[in-house]
Every structure is written in C-alpha cells, then in structure tokens.
Length: 137
Image 1 (cartoon, rainbow, N blue to C red):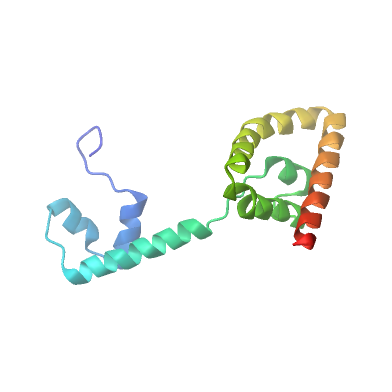
Image 2: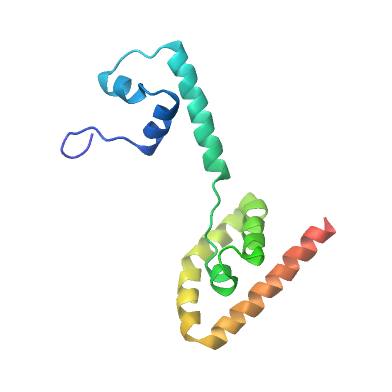
C-alpha cells in the first residue's frame, strides 16, 4: 500500500500479469490461486529472471566517452567486466570503485585535454592486455 492507502503495482506484478492476466485481481482480492495460475506464475517468474540476466549493463563511462557507447572497444570492455571482473571478489570491488570515480574523471577530462589523452592511453593499454589474455586462453 502507498502512503495514501491505495494499492500500488510493482513492475514484477505487471510482468506476472503478462502470463496470468487475472493475477492483479486475485492478488488484491486475496483469492485462492489455481494450480494452472501457479504454473503460469512460475513460467512468468522464470521468464522475468532470464530477462534480468540477459539485460546488459551499459555503464562504461570512460570508454563510452572516448569511443562511443556502442563502439566495439567499449563492448569488449563491458564483456571483460561481465565475464572476468564480475566473477571475482576483487574484480567486483574494482567495478564499484570505477563506478564511483569514472563520472568525476569523465567530467574533468572533458575540460582538461591532457587527462583525456592519458585516459585514452590507459584504456588502449587495458584493451591490449585484455586481447592478449583472451588469445592466450
């Protein structure tokens, strides 16, 4: 319930209603749910989970600034983040720190061309390291 005691509908509830159209009606009336409806809900929940897993994290501030959001180099960096860094505790810490610092670096680099060139050098070096790592596997 919201502050004004009106029911609110979550995005998950809307997704469930896609597979079970009477879901919201039954949820708010407190109706018993049939076995068919429970099966439809399981199917909807599985589909929702699959969608969330495939949704791509587009954040890559520095590379997006330097190359463009959909440039192949930016995509390679995102893939490395998702397939390598996220699988390790230290990698997840690095990602968290990067997400805190990169918007600031991005803002400053737009005003100071030397910093932008330095970032370009660092990112290109990182891309070479990533490429070498994948070639050696």
